[in-house]
Length: 174
Image 1 (tube, helix red, strand yellow):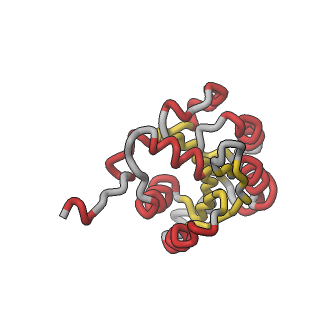
Image 2: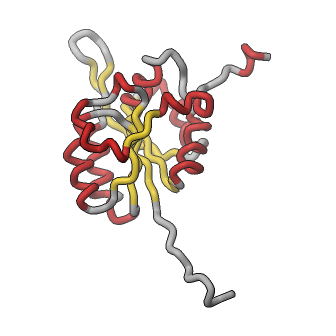
Image 3: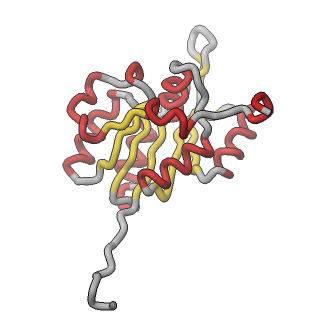
C-alpha cells in the first residue's frame, strides 16, 4: 500500500472576511447570518483552516467578539471613528490587504475572501498572478462591485446558500 499513492500535500486555505461588507450584504437580503454555521461552511466547503474576521472595534461588542472567537474565528480590529452624522465607521480594507498580502502571505496556499468590494481588485489581481486566489464569496448581487467581473471563475454568492447559513432564532420557533 505504501507505494500505491504518494502523500498529497493538502493546500492551506485561509479566509479573510470583511465583516462590514458581509453583514450589510446579508442584512440587505432581510436575513441574519449564523456565524457558527458560516465557520463550519468555510471549513467544509473550502477547507478553510484559519478564518480571520476584520472588524471595527466597539467596546460594547465584547460579547460578540468572545462568541466569534469561540466559533473559531481570529479577529483583527480596526479602530472606529464617527462620521459627521454620528455613524460609526471602521473600514477594514487596508487591514485585509496588509494581512493577506504580507502578514499571513507565507502561511497559506489559497485565500478565500468574503467581500464584494471592488477596492480589493488589485489584491485579487496580485494573488491571481501568484496562484494564491482561492474564492471570492459575495453576500449578494447588490454588494458586488462591477470591478469584479474579471474574477467570474472565483466568485460564489452566499445568498444561494441561505438555507445553510441563516440564523434561526430557536426560541421563536419552539
